[in-house]
Image (cartoon, rainbow, N blue to C red; front, top):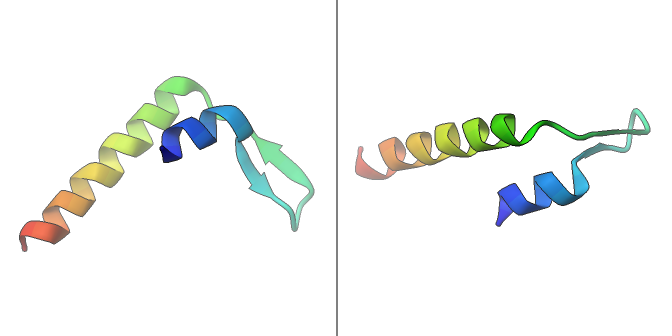
Amino acid sequence: MSQAMLINQGIILPQFGVIVCPHTWLIMFIAIIAGTLMGAVGTA
């Protein structure tokens, strides 16, 4: 769900007045890393 938000809206940085739209491969990489970290924390 959060990946779809990043693809549709981008990363909004209101303090700088900038919207960053990362590439799809970068969003997939972030999601895989986040899932790995959550799995590691959940099993520890």
